[in-house]
Image (cartoon, rainbow, N blue to C red):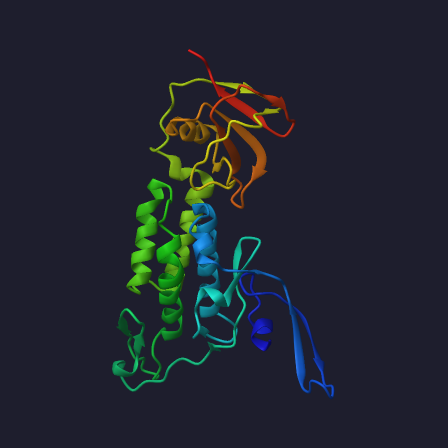
Length: 294
């Protein structure tokens, strides 16, 4: 409870309050009231869009940066598994701080600074002050790599972003970067994605013309694609109309698409892709685009 209070951050579960109760039935009872989050289910996360999975990795990067530079010093999470986190409106938040440790590891030499994991070990330098340099930070970072980054970051990412994402995964897997550089690179990915710069040199102008039908939608004629925001159809996020056209051109069954007024956390528009347009109905919140005949 004290750590939740002292380590307040958008990616730490919010503590609303607490109360102390001492009764004959349950002596010395302390109850905390926190925000409600959903458990992290990795199998489900692997089936979600890359954009949502990247948000979780970015949340984790921001959290680890905060823990490395917290008011208490560098904080490490000794029990760092997906079950120690929850999702609140798509943001990853740490909920269990029972096994958090603030003290850095004392050492007489680098032999005392071995960071052990099931798959491999790392030897960190021993500082002149007798502390293992960056051990708390590096422990958090490697756990983020082995439990989250390696599964969630590169999988089905936009092709132009994959080299940068691979470098993030590789650097954290080798502990070549600290949390500052890791977060800086994650923020760079966000900027490229949110600004549409990742589309440069990858979005080819289509020769196919599309007819715009404002204030309308196609209620049926769905097909499934992966990953989709809608299980029964093909609902994807796009940066602009040109990207929507590109997506439709890349799907053999796509003959039309419907642009909604809904956006994702990065501000991208959600678009339904359709197999045809035999039935177009009025809808003031959507715009339909159909392939011109010919």
